[in-house]
Length: 327
Ligand code: PBG
Image (cartoon, rainbow, N blue to C red; front, side, top):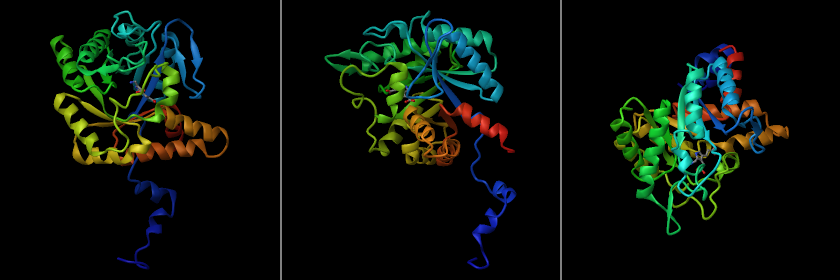
């Protein structure tokens, strides 16, 4: 049927019609809220490049988790920033490390939380790389046992899902095996499967103090030019035992999300990273864009592309919008 018999505008003519034909709906249960925990008590340090996001001690983090629970958000992605760093990132698998203490305490005090933990070495290593350095390079196979140890220490502390973000080859398999051998077959793996070497991580590296001290991450993170390679990475992670696969960043990689959605029937997470958040906050702060509307539009786009799970620093703000809109 063609114009004038068919008129697409008919379905846009009122709020009620628009709502009933809406194809993509954001839901608070899609969101995962990333948080940064630091040692100490009553610590609440603003991260300059990420307005509204803080480095917090465990006590304050627990308060915020209770607050987001009140908004309906259940899932949190936890990053730890240790008291000290060394070449082997040994605080990353210390059973009394910041993240392990945080996991135990959060699980003690909040029942309604799905705790996902970042498994990587860059926040814990003095050189800021995501693995063990040999001859000036990140050594893949030597790094694997460390990642398995980190993941296992999180599981022992009570993590529900571990999320390896290092991009070493073979790590999902090694982590799955370590978890299973130790009786943690119920702990899931959300793998950063297609993680690109992206300049959008800039503000995060300030937040986590994890900027590499030499070189960059292009030797292990993916080239932004590639999409077929992302599908190979995802396929390997699924074969190795990933339960959820992730694409990161989100906004500049919607085509990757879409391609993955078409190819795989596993849950897909998309991480809308620090730089995506900071850009919107900055432009919003200047009054150049309507921050709230742009935020909702971006999150909707990521979901429309095919993501099931949205990891976003906007989780709280977006939940408030969803809670107050009539939907
Ligand atoms: C650590 C890690 C990074 C992010 C999540 N986990 C940074 C990096 O790889 O440099 C980035 C998150 C963000 O920018 O919000 N491996």
